[in-house]
Length: 315
Image (cartoon, rainbow, N blue to C red):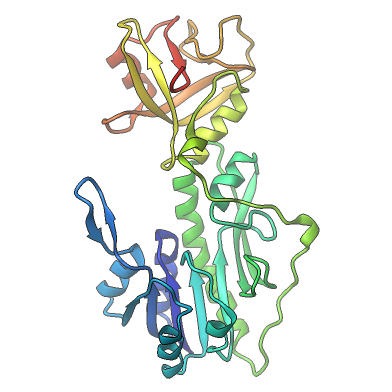
């Protein structure tokens, strides 16, 4: 099968690598243009562009795949199927019409749950015990097409967004493989329509989503820490005995139901942190300008003791 691959971010790279080693022919990889990154604002290729170049695949960097020029370029390739993963652009009907076998999309949730740009983070934020990936036929509405294949996995109690995102990207290869096998016959697979009554949204996160408040329940704070790492990060300030505030990002933490009398944000005698309900046991964090570290290393380096505080930024 002649395939055009549309992808941009890290989530798409394992599936692109799988396709490159499959019997199918990747006739073109379409990705977003290079973007400035880092302090020097140097132009860097997308993760998909870097992988495609490494594997010697034909590559098109495209600001808008729906332009007439892009559509005609795709049509001349006579592709059979479009594969869309973490692309960042919506494919309009004219683009999709280029493909006799239509287009399929790999999404990091068990659709119809968590449609949108940040499904992994929102699954953790919502306290889900399981999640997975879905391969579905692309339609006009976002993430709403009939589902062809799903793969399910448990969410680990200490798993961060970064870790779960990587696992789902790997699981996605198996889902894509299963979906391709459905196209081996003469008829196109119809898929299973999504139950709209069960649909939920997973909108893009903003930097403001990372601002922690310690008057919230410990369970909610712990989820935010895991769900928001590495971006936008669950951020707050640490106020130690020296009195100089240090901005920190909490990476991993768990909640304990032990009630305490201390004000929210206060370090307890057993070096947990009081919250609006229960206490927070921090496992890892990252001080601003430093590398991530374990809680005990932070305690030793900052001489953390009972009565020190974690407060919201700007408090």
